[in-house]
Image (cartoon, rainbow, N blue to C red; front, side, top):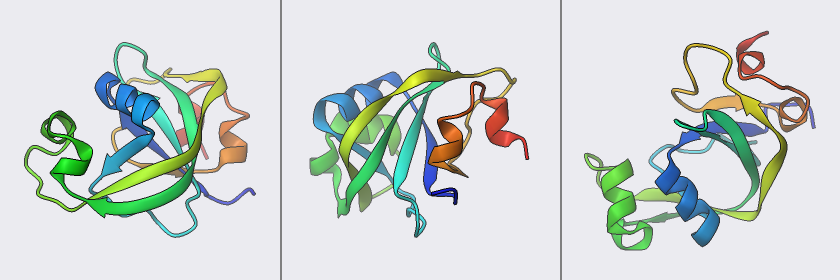
Length: 128
């Protein structure tokens, strides 16, 4: 698949821990049709794309399902429902995609899984 089938999102250390332990990532955003994968750009101190996962399911839920701490850290000013994304399997990148530009991932970025596996630096996500 060479189309834009992947969404790159930024994630903090707490949300990454929840993702690894409980297997979900929650967002207020709708996931575009055709997106099958999500890649995770970990913010400071890591500043790299480190993991990706194939979407298994997306369900709407409330604060009880995501947990109060997750809600306070990620959605303090937003009321439910949230989209909880579960993954078939979370995979570690063979090599981290390192931040080499001033800004990291500020919002969701559509990309291709095939291309993601071939790049080394974050700037390559933004180059044409």
